[in-house]
Every structure is written in structure tokens, then in C-alpha cells.
Length: 266
Image 1 (cartoon, rainbow, N blue to C red):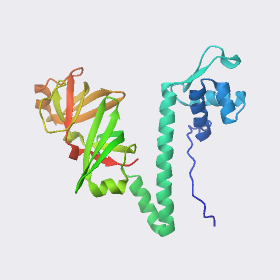
Image 2 (tube, rainbow, N blue to C red):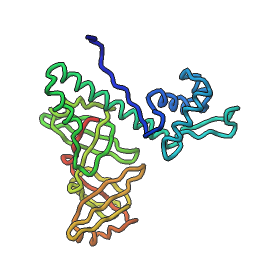
Image 3 (cartoon, one colour):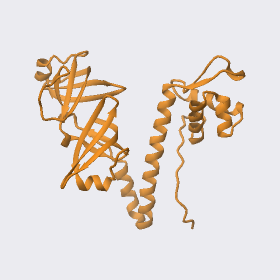
Image 4 (spheres, one colour):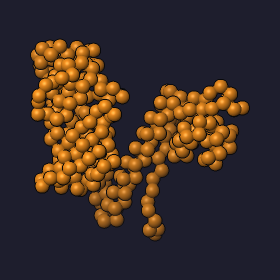
């Protein structure tokens, strides 16, 4: 039996369509760096014909093209990776990282107790009911005697702060540059009309535009567009939503405590 490290290969495929795996993602990255399909083909060790065929396959697999070729086509010209292509590169990288971590945990579980491996897999696949989930980058960790304050970058214009136990921060290995998920229940999010909520103890403040509002008999679900493709949803009373004038298009600020921000590793 081999003692080598167990690895998993990630591939994407629609029914009756060619597969897209790590080699195609490497080609996308090379096109982004080189600005040319021919140059990218040389970088990854493909013929120009094979690279063009791969680009055609990837463009046909998704609703929006991943690569846009400039005038000149095969005879010259350039190529660029589209927004959809960059999104696929990022998503594939996230999936590969998560798959690798999950496999490492499962491999360890099999070695220690084969019967317990399935329970480990169930925990890894556990879903959460938390409405707001953000992928963030840790920018600073301040350790205390009992708790740790973790500062996060959500987007260039938005920051979050989470307070968790010092033991949790240590077990998660939180440090500057680490990628984490920040989870905030919609019921923990308070809303203030406008972009200046005044003096309030909640240190997390995200200002955006009301993009949707769904009213029930008692409560309203209000979603704010924060920009850069990010949104946050709050569950407040319908009377409060009416009093604050929270109609689509209105500016509002979401407020929530640092202790209400749960952190999870991707």
C-alpha cells in the first residue's frame, strides 16, 4: 500500500459535454497573463490548435464566454479573459482548496477509524441556515485574555470585525491573509435609514441601497446592495421598514455587533 499523499482531481462537466479540469483553468490563467491564446498555448505546452479548441469548449460550456478574442483571430490579435472567466478561475480555485482540505480530513479519519470517516464527511457537508455569508480576508488578529478581535476585508470599501474566543482563533489558525467565511444571521442585522446612523455601539456598519424588500404579515426581509456583487439581508418588523422608508432604491445602513459575526474556514 502506498504511503503517498492522497489527492483529488476536480473536473466540471455538463451532460454530454467535454470536461473542464485544472489544465483548462491553467490555460485561462495563461491567457490572462499573456493576452494571447497562442502565447498561452506555448506556456502550458499545448499546440495553438488545441488551445483554440479548449477555449471554444469552455466558452460553450457556460452562459457567458470566458475568453474574448480581439480582431485578428488565429492569425494574430489578442485575447482577454472576461469577467465570467475570472469568476470561474476564482471559483475553481476555491473548490480545489476546499476539496483538498476535505480530502485531507477524510484521509486522516480513514487511517484512524474507517467507520468514523462517514461522520466526518457529513460534518464537512453540513449546511447552514445563516442568511448572510461572506468570503473575507483576515487583515488583523488582536489576541486578548479570553477573546480575540478579528478584522476582515469584505471589499475595498467594506470592513468587518468579529469577536470570537481566543481558543477558536488559535484552533482555526487565524492570521493576516487567511481566507474565512463570515456568517451573520439576518435577525442580527439592524437597519438605519441613510448613510449616517449616528453614535451606536455596533461596530459593523455596511451602507448600501435597498435592492429588494419582501413583506410578511409581521416582518419584512430587506436586502441591501453593497456594491461589488455583495448584498446583505436583514429581517426586521414591517412597521420598522415602513417607518424607515425602506423601499427599493433607498439608502440604508446595516448594523450588527462584532459578537454576532461567526467565522468559518473555507
